[in-house]
Amino acid sequence: MVKICCIGAGYVGGPTMAVIALKCPNIQVAVVDISVQRINAWNSDQLPIYEPGLDDVVKGCRGKNLFFSTDVNKHVCESDIVFVSVNTPTKTRGLGAGKAADLTYWESAARMIADVAKSDKIVVEKSTVPVKTAEAIEKILTHNSKGINFQILSNPEFLAEGTAIQDLFNPDRVLIGGRETPEGNKAVKALKDVYAHWVPEDRILTTNLWSAELSKLAANAFLAQRISSVNAMSALCEATGADVTQVSYAVGKDTRIGPKFLNASVGFGGSCFQKDILNLVYICDCNGLPEVAEYWKQVIKINDYQKNRFVNRVVASMFNTVSNKKVAILGFAFKKDTGDTRETPAIDVCQGLLGDKAQLSIYDPQVNEDQIQRDLTMKKFDWDHPLHLQPMSPTAVKKVSVVWDAYEATKDAHAVCILTEWDEFKKLDYKRIYDNMQKPAFIFDGRNIVNAEKMREIGFIVYSIGKPLDAWLKDMPAVA
Ligand code: UDX
Ligand code: ADP
Image (tube, rainbow, N blue to C red):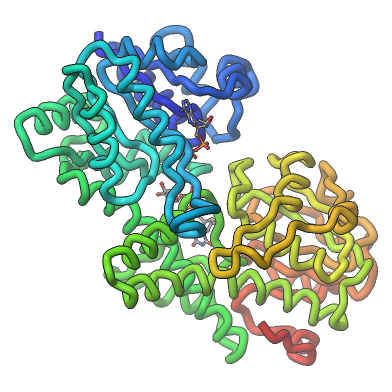
């Protein structure tokens, strides 16, 4: 029986391994992590991450051929294939701070594999890492190998949170990069055989190591670039009276462009887009390509601009001050159907409003108070001016309350900001919300999910990203 071990039981490792176990009953899968709390949660009824469909997959194979454990050494030692799916955040200090990936976790995982291995292993890079990481890992492993043969593969994950299970069941493609040697080809084939249990062969692409690594960064950069492009258009739409949803629809009808990923929003978030682009920028800089670096950096700059623009719109519309006004925040996660808040635009928007002394009442169906308070107190890392940034003052965060109901959040509020596109926000009784708010009552829809005309009929002053502005908003222009 083939044995797989995955180091790192996070958003990538957990769901991916659960699906491999489900689809390959003849393979034994162990997911290991240094965090006891995380592993305990994976072994309980309350999984550590919220992901539609995940509970059923885990329940279907946990204890049969899927195991979650903190005994990292044992499972690594026993396995034929080791996936490494540890965190690779952006470095916050030292060389490359603010841009380069922090490979501390990766390196220590690689050293541990070299340390405990007693038989040949295929080591699969699953976390997003900079191009040439596989080569560095290969060096660590072969210099400490005691004669053991390690084959390194890059197998980047393309799943998106909120749709992870669907994406894993039916991937657009599986990418496997390996060394172009007989041993490398053999390792690629072994991993291909795992995916071939459920993925059609023509969707399993094989490349060299560096192409696979770079493809992941490139795919995320292209996706993020689409959002920044449409968000840049949204500002122009507001200035000219065009409607960004109509523009996106017309643009997306071109089959060369396609309709997906063209929704204007308050900004993109998530653990990948910003991190991967910063990574790309760093690699370009290091390779003497400043123009290419600058090109990609602009995708992040527009994203920051969009979040600032939203805050300025809120403040400007409300007589240029939100000081001590209650502002309801609906949605804190970086997208719907996840409880993940990494790089969520809600952090910047809330911090911006708190900077103007607003009183925030936040509701998200999947994010708890602890997480929100932690996110809002954390020092935000600014990759251009890292030293100038200060953490939020403790008094500012006292101005945040977290509630478990949208009606409670909006009661007596002056304004509602919709920051995540949760389905339940589309179905709220906005008449009831309006009746319980201060007047004039504002809605700032950062995800374009409410019907602006209906909201206006109720009496709201409405701002929708990239849509023609209310007369009220036109009279109170926001300078970004
Ligand atoms: C992304 C990639 O999609 C995935 O392939 C990769 O493996 C990891 O990074 P993820 O970050 O989980 O996945 O979610 P995604 O659906 O890509 O959304 C990222 C951000 O973009 C979210 O904040 C989302 O709200 C925003 N977004 C997405 C928009 O603002 N507009 C869109 O049209 C699409
Ligand atoms: P991702 O979104 O990429 O899955 P996460 O942060 O959710 O990232 O998960 C990464 C996991 O890797 C964390 O649970 C962390 O505890 C784990 N981890 C990091 N380093 C090691 C290591 N050396 N051994 C085992 N687990 C590790």
